[in-house]
Amino acid sequence: MTTTKLGSAPSAAKLPAPTHTPTPVATAAVVKTVATSEAAAPAPGFDAKVAGKHALNPRGEHVPTSADPGSLWGAERRQPNPELRAAMTEFRAMTPQAQKAKIEELKGKQDELSKKMLARIEVLDARYKNMRNVTKAAMLRELSSQTAAMTPAEKEHLDGLLEKAEGIAKQIEALKEKAATLPDSKNATPAQLAERTALARQIKNARGRLSDATKASTAYVDSLGLKNERLAVNEQKIDPNAPPKESPKSLWGMISAWFSLSTFIGSFTRIFSAPTATDIVKQDAQKAEARLAEEQKFQVRQEEFRRRAEDDTRRRSDADAVDRRAQLLALVQALAGHTPTRAVSPGRA
Image 1 (cartoon, helix red, strand yellow):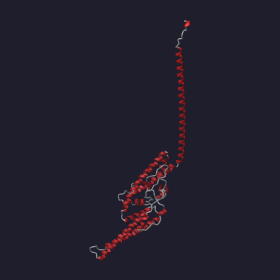
Image 2 (cartoon, one colour):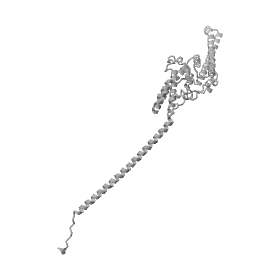
Image 3 (cartoon, one colour):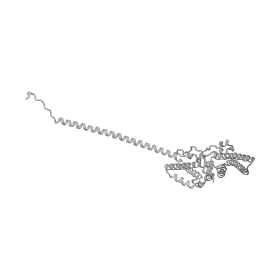
Image 4 (cartoon, helix red, strand yellow):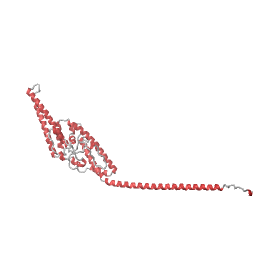
């Protein structure tokens, strides 16, 4: 089974989407890769002083936009996926709102999967660091034999590093065998005791060099962005209780599922984003028409309110006029019913 390059250092990144905030750092941490030119650069040997400088920081474009997933896995270009085709057909039939919700749902699943992957990677790497150096070298050999994410030059360089580590391991075994031929300290002569002490010193020194050698080999693999694959390929050896490699709960299974989700998200995003510009124009036109209709309705309501106000004013004016005529008529009638008494002149009495 082949592997691909996944980085291990968290970094801010986001998947292409028309309206989506950056995904959590968990997802960003599993989508880093490195440029081949930098990865293929000669690495230092086993000197402890330069071993730390060999651990390059992985950097590059994130997976969904930088390469075809099939090529990243080291396999030949895949035939069209019937499941993906069916899902894309179903996706096209959805409303824009449903499409957006579907993409967000898949991104949420991918983020959750990323968190599980990172937690598992942390546990496995801690166990890996505490394993015997010869076992680490064997695991790196296993990775080199299975991955297609390394160039021939990178594999050749790693093989050279591992050959040096294995050579040191053989030296240690030879020194231990030689020490085993000497009598124990109670029965040893002073010369034999001195020889045993010298052998012990040589074994200790060789073990230090072997530790530096395996650290340098591991750092080189990780500098290529293959830390996750280093752990996924050897998960069952690092953790005997780990699920089988074919299980979706294994690190390898989670990496495969992550790439599957990435493929679906990328395909759905392209479908969703293609008509987005046209949709925005249509939506803007519809909003403009709606605003114009609302303005017209407002003007009609204003005109109706003005007419009602004028009608009310006219009715009140007419009512006041009627009241004034009624009052005047009442006054005339009152005056007509009242005859004033006129004074009689004395001459006419």
